[in-house]
Image 1 (cartoon, rainbow, N blue to C red):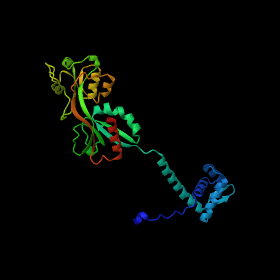
Image 2: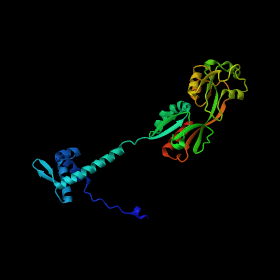
Image 3: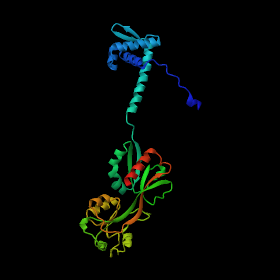
Length: 306
């Protein structure tokens, strides 16, 4: 066995703790009576403990005067040391009693996913993971996880990002959604309605745009105007959802992000096809996937997606 690891600790040569506490209280008050009130014992118990301490040390700690006490030089030195020691002990115990500060984890994702999927689950997250402060960074610009821009990300795409460890959460599909107020039933009637457009980031692998949908559906697009001009256009998918809810037209929307409105009947999917745009993935910089707080957030998000 290692000599350092097997070394025997020398026992501390200390008087009984009760005697030291009794003396420190009596020295602070210069009164056995007030020391007894502080420690919830009798004055005679304080006197007995102090006398036992003096016998152990072999020297008097108090000069017992008429109706009062005074510290001897030895008593003054011991009182100063004990007061500092007990103050440090009390502070250490108090630090343990206080709840530790929550560990912060920054999650980055696009604005629509943050608003439509993450925010509605924040209360549940705080209940499930009270020791973690989840900070949400919503941006349509990708954050460099390797440089510490965020701890963990939810991204859409292929999941093949150099330097990142990723895990598929759920497939993402887009379909025509609208308010039931429009009464839309057949794909052939779609050109009669306003189209709601959403901007996609340049370089997206399979953007859900109306020209693509018309091509896959085998339906002729609206004539006479450019596809973009035929309807409303938004840079934020959340606004497109709100426009569809208000009955302003038909939008190509994420079946994931509009799931609640589909469940409630506020939006309907009158027909297909649904466009495959890839999947949502969890991602973290390689080498950081084992960090306890990051792992906790990772597993919680995965459980919600499941």
